[in-house]
Image (cartoon, rainbow, N blue to C red):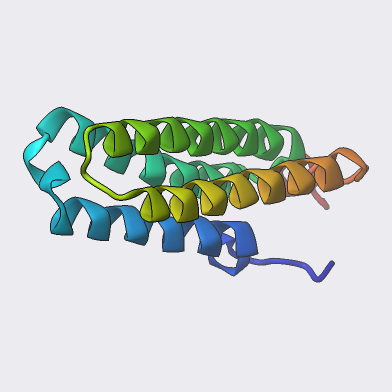
Length: 133
């Protein structure tokens, strides 16, 4: 794996951002826009996925990064659950639900795979490098 210098280069962050944009479009183009509680909750959860990936990366420590990836994965699950509520309230059709749920399941698997990859690395992160004097 090539050295990644910024979180924007992470494919899982790019995918999380793409899915967050889909949620924003969903909110803006359906009756969900009038359901202020659910609208705000699903926007926060979908945004939390990409934000936690970014925050974990910026912590510059492997252990913290994995912890934030775990939180991001949890937020992806929360977003999926909220998508079922959006469907149950008839804000989206079944096809839209299936596509978005599948996309979030795939992202969750990719985050899990990245966590597994990091678990196998001995590298602790830049914050643990010994300073040269």
